[in-house]
Length: 433
Image 1: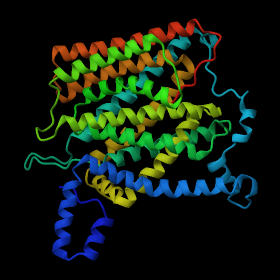
Image 2: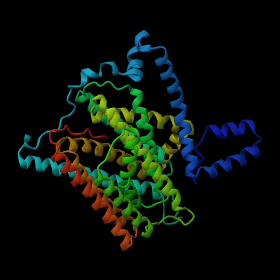
Image 3: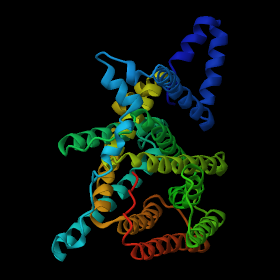
């Protein structure tokens, strides 16, 4: 059995309560540790210990108009974090951030080789990432033929931290080596997208404890609908009729799969309702992330700068929460006991970071339509690979639902590309991370 990971609460209970009562309360808390809602609020409590002081400091510096009156060694850092360069953003209007190379910038053979490399890089990175994600969250480590029991890793937040720390390192090196242009966004604004991003990632890992990986992939495909709704709320966007039509078809396809598929290899005492609730949380948080990033891109930053800023706060939030709850030391102990898990966790992070770089390069070279087609194919292959490796069963009607979902996604790509050909004079939209 995994050890109780919170260091603070046991110490307080043993300090203020009799030993017998403290032991009883600890056993109750240990039982609550298996409830995902409790873990979610414990994580949020850890994030709040960073968010609340940060909010108070930002409010204080804005109230005293520190950008005009402040001086000292910390002035540049505070100005960049709280105020940014918003008063000078107009100077950046003519700055070109990573312009996409035209198709005739190289020979057709060279362009074809680039496309093959991009497609292979995206497929290998994210297919490996998906297989490892399901392996880490649904299988035990340290099983042997005699006892037959192993130890299962349960801390989704640590996996999020591992992904973010490597992504931060890669994007930071990229920004330094390629001298990314300065932008005017205050650093604290990255924290909004960062918080929703780590929560959506946590939900993504946590959901695999309750639902199958194919179900998760289809649910992620259906996030088109909440993204559109969030776009109306956050950015006041308007959408074409075909976007509503394809969103409705995606909903129908996902419903067909969820209602008829027998792909559930989880224990009977674990309800699928928990998995659905976590997936809803993932979709809501991820929808906010993409729309908030659209707002940040108005400051003329590059995609790698976005990657660096968001991952910087993600590392701050997750490592703070892990240290406060003791989860960091438990996870490192698990890694020391199971070298296979350590290899999987590192490889998972490498695939995630490399995949993000392939995303930027593919969009830069070939545009969003080609990238979407590659990633849609990746989702379909990921479902087939998961069913083959982990034995998920899918009914014929569930398979038809999968077909409806991916047909709808390809229709969206086709319709969007047709609209863009009719608007060649309009500047291409900036892609979000």
